[in-house]
Length: 128
Image (tube, rainbow, N blue to C red; front, side):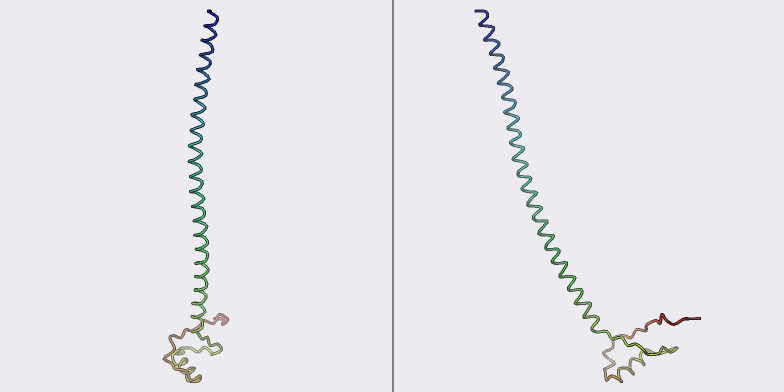
């Protein structure tokens, strides 16, 4: 009888230990399951943020291209209003207004349409 009691006690203790171990692993499994759900939510959130950034990047590229085209159009429009006349000999104390008026008379242009006259430096001319 004594042996039976000892065996029962040993089995009871072993069962408690197994139950305790099983409960420990069950709790751990539950913790991992909660963490996995949290990670899934976070991954989905990051994927959405990534997709938003991809779309923003595409939109910015389109806007950048449109702005570059607009700059090109504006630069071309600005250049279309400019006229460069070359080959007129530079004279000392020359009056650009008089030269501009003479050119306008020659080409039958209205001198009031001239906004400005800009002299160009002659880089080929050597000074002593």
